Length: 121
Image 1 (tube, helix red, strand yellow):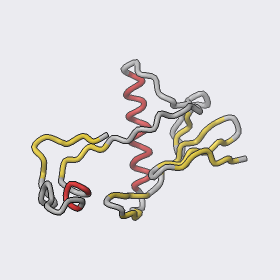
Image 2 (cartoon, rainbow, N blue to C red; image 1 turned 90 degrees about the horizontal axis):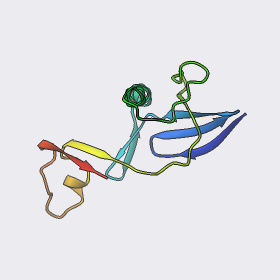
Image 3 (spheres, rainbow, N blue to C red; image 1 turned 180 degrees about the vertical axis):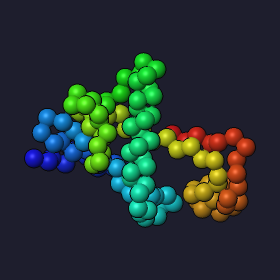
């Protein structure tokens, strides 16, 4: 039986029996616009899985659940149920979104490539 736990802008967490499946959406968003590009969820899933494995190889624990073999499945990533700390981090290499649209006078011209990426929390 599947129980919907939580849904964000890019992921869905579902309880499936004793395990939790983290599924990734094909959703893209920004500047009050939302859309979907087929395959982006799968790319996020692959990146997330390998990033978590990398963190674990460096001694940083993650919530990957590989108790039944590989945590990566065709449907998502098996994870342990935790109480999440909600945080969003954006790394911008190119001026888009509120850097261009949200000001009477744009901070940067749209498409400006930053010499140093801007990290937003």
